[in-house]
Image (spheres, rainbow, N blue to C red):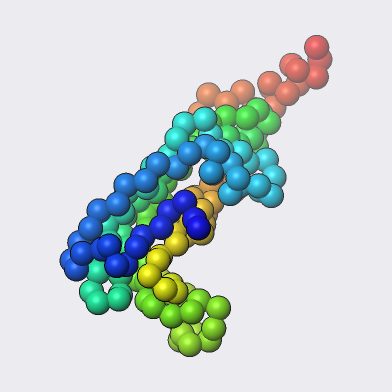
Length: 153
């Protein structure tokens, strides 16, 4: 079972709020295989609103976490806070079959099976997509000057 799970049977019709912590350990495990990216030291958070209508659930909210990445200019690691909006319609059905329309991915529609909506993959993907491709540690980055000074020592 995943870390972030919503139980359809326990959910009231209408709007429900869900708050989860993202531990650096969980995020670090999810980032395995992402070279040069590690989970930050600070815990993250998931703040979601689920609107249930029958077995359809609209999930909206925000996820936040921190990562340790390497600056592309000075090659030093630094902490960066990242965040993403979540907006997805969850429909019952088997995600592994073709009982869905081809354009569901474009529309922010996902499938779940049984009475549980597992959000781990959605949360991971939302955060990973917010990690900058060319991370810069800031306006005061010493850039190549730092590297030249390090190499001379």
